[in-house]
Amino acid sequence: MLSATGLVKTFPGVRALDGATLDVAGGSVHALLGENGAGKSTLVKIITGVYQPDGGEVTLDGKQVHFSGPLDALRAGIGVVHQERNLVPEFSVAENIVLHHLPSRFGLVRRRDITTEARRCLDLLELDLDPDAPVSRLSAAQAQLVEIAKALSLDNRVLLLDEPTASLTGEEADRLYAIVRRLTAGGHAVVLVSHKLEEVFAVADTVTVLRDGRSVAEGRPLAEFSRSQVVDLMVGRAHASVALGARTVDADATPALELRGVETAAGHRDVSLLVRPGEILGWYGLIGAGRTELAKALLGMDRITAGEVLVHGHTVHIGSVGTALRRYKIGYVSENRKEEGLFLEQPITRNIGVTVWRRISRAGLIPDRGERDLVSLYTQRLGIRAASPRQLVGQLSGGNQQKVSLAKWLAADCDILIVDEPTVGIDVRTKAAFHELIADLATGGMAIVLISSDLPEIVTLADRIAVLADFRVSGELVNDRDYDRMSQRIIRLIHAEVTPREAA
Image (cartoon, rainbow, N blue to C red; front, side):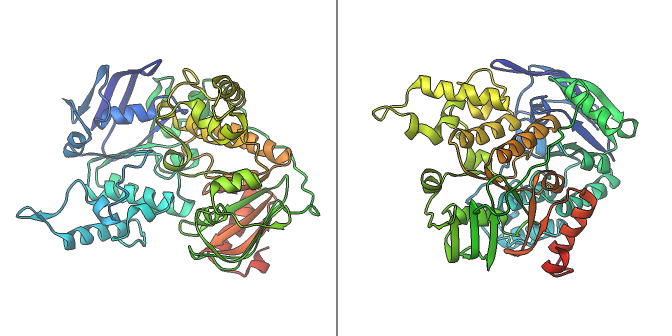
């Protein structure tokens, strides 16, 4: 149904695609895999008209096509959910869903039909959202589901999903993939770009692997490969998973961060949690559980209406992220790196240096050398791949952007770090490096709050796991790192089948 042959695309300083090929049959789910920077998103953007190729061709139903922009691809029946969300924050959920096919009569938009169509698409995802709510009020995960609903509303014959479950929990991802199976059963073609290999093997039929802009496996049945073989193809060598050493936490140490009966304007009630120096506390829950909202309240981005927040045993009142950093050495790696975590139109140097400008400035001026030295240290430590420190962050791959987002907080020398969805859209090798880094930070004495929708990630890293549901803590578990046992206990807490005491 869809074919891309010999695609070439060059950006300043890098060849993103070097003869890549993709062939997708109707009625199938085709996985497109590769590390960050392998060219996956570039290939998707060429197919959907966002980029024009420097070489090669795209055919649809055997006929060569040239798309001057995304609307041309939509009209031809190719829909896409990009890794970077494409929603209008000021518009409502319903308006975003029907944006490309507004129901109208005699030139007038029919608002009742907008709501009806939006509810149909939201119901497909079993998503309980107000169609009239502005997108700007949604969490990153909710916005991701609206993006998916928007693609489903167009009933495209070819649907490209670029990291569609990056911010979703397993339960929400299962719902999406049930819809994907219904689409392929009806003859649609689905291209799935994902770093979550367990999902890929659960839903995909065939696979193409990109490495350094080239196809190293083209349209092969996925059943021919083991997971380790796929990883070997992606990284070009055998991949050794990182074995994280045991970490000892002083149970008698004064908590670095403690919440006592906290309530917030966002809706949290009676939240009591603590994290000690050298400890990783995981926060897990479904979309709408209130994890990110609680983090933002702690940082002064939302109002705490009752209870007490303590830092190193002292009651504090934090009014802004700046106050949290400067007075209490609390850092926050946002789940929404593109809108909240980075300056995409600024170079790497500015992004990493922003948290320490006060420290390195001289007479109100920021010395270039001071910034360069700082950036050099963290680009090497985190393995940030870029043409130069002056490269714009918006030109980096998703994994390298996330490294820059983390580097600026490491440069600030935080005592407490809240990390929200740290490995969203990151390949297996980079994810392992991130896990090792986070574990090393905790071993070095940093207190870390890890918010993640990736249950294996939570079980791999956290010392204790707090399960949130409906803006409350439904239970807290000591992590024994037995994935099967821990996942069952966590799921029981999410669905409140037992009391927190019984689960613990």
